[in-house]
Amino acid sequence: MRVYLVIVDETEEAHVALRFASRRAAKTGGMVHLLALVPKQAFSAFGGVQATIEEEARDRAEVLANSAAGELAYESGKMPQIAVRVGDSKTVVSDYLKEHPEVAALVLSAAPEGPPGPLVSHFSSHVGSLSCPLFIIPGGLSHEEIDRLS
Image (cartoon, rainbow, N blue to C red; front, side, top):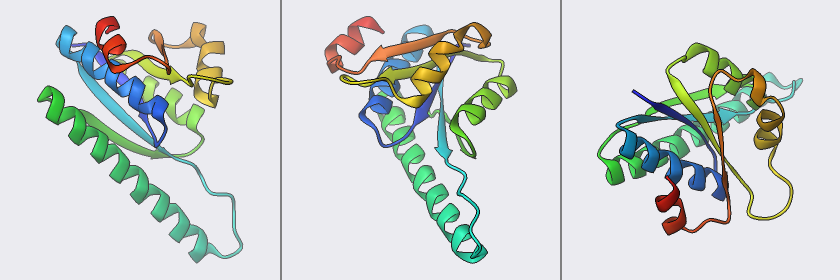
């Protein structure tokens, strides 16, 4: 079964990548894995405050991932696999790919204007060392164009 990995956050690019991956998975009999990233907080002398900030960030990421999963399940009838991980985004994604050899493609989306985001920049410059293909979906595509291309 083909598995498409999408990084979930609050950006429009994440919605574009999710739409493409969900349509592609439906057409290929595959499934989608959603990975929500929680940045590691810088060390704070006030440990309780730092722990609260990290917990709130994790809770926000879980809500975001569950919301995306609900949308995907509503549209496709399939519930995606959800993971929430704390740490440097590039490292977390790389580690996830190593842990999940069933992932057939990492699906990211580029911003419709301006420079690409940090994940697109990083993984496009390291695509030769990835364990799967990298799909970069143009962020300016309409829903109809995404559906046609997927």
